[in-house]
Image 1 (tube, each protein chain N blue to C red):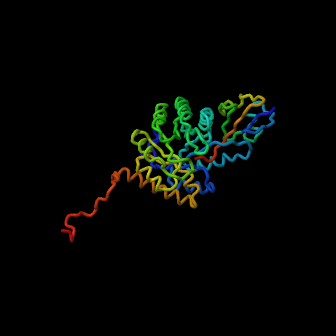
Image 2: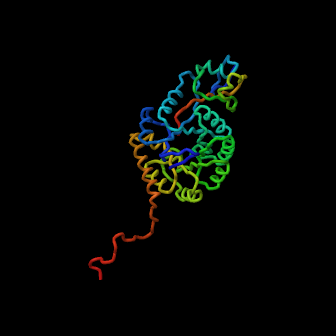
Image 3: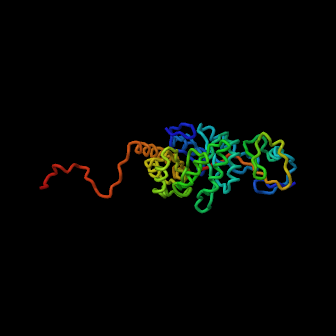
Length: 65
Length: 257
């Protein structure tokens, strides 16, 4: 199915958010996640099912002012 | 000593971490500034190269407090979700709340800011709102639960210093007990000294240091300016006058009368 990952469409086989992070090589990474504009805590990613067209944000620490 | 949400700090110079020529220069600049608080952000990471982790390990090595921001957020929803994400990643309830209302000036959207502040304070966040010098907005932010305000000096990155001295002075006078941190627009150390002389509690500097020819040298210069400005405030500056007043006593002046 297709999801919108960080603003770009992507084909994924992942059924849950945790599987998507594995697919991206970000399993265990220091990132925060949101699906369709709602924060999804790391502890519940394994239960966060993904659907066609979901907007997924994966954010990491970065320089800021 | 500066106290922000119960945290006591020696340094009144807070540093942004963006736009430095290298991580090594950033590290040296934080040391030269003797900063105890640095701001950080969250950005998209789609690949496995884990750039964010490298940056985060550098920041952790600095042994400073982090103040995550919601930079780039243009709506209440974006800002609140970003704050939730930042709380998990950076393990702090501190959040520098930015809700941008206009792209040319990057000025805050005061309506969205007050609403986002209300939601986040109610959830237990300790909110540092990036705001203007507007007294009514400041009142709203305080009644939303904010216990620190971050008024702009001038637009972010502009280096123009304290644009509205009258408005900022009125803000300081109106809220004598609220920690006020000048955030944005400071260009040179004299601007920072001025802010502290006027009674502002601290300044947050990013571009003026990061983009200087020698960021480490500039960080040290800002540290001195902030200390001088604070010392001057405590020492009680004289009032400006319109006409001259001789500093040398006039009694006994030679050749007169």
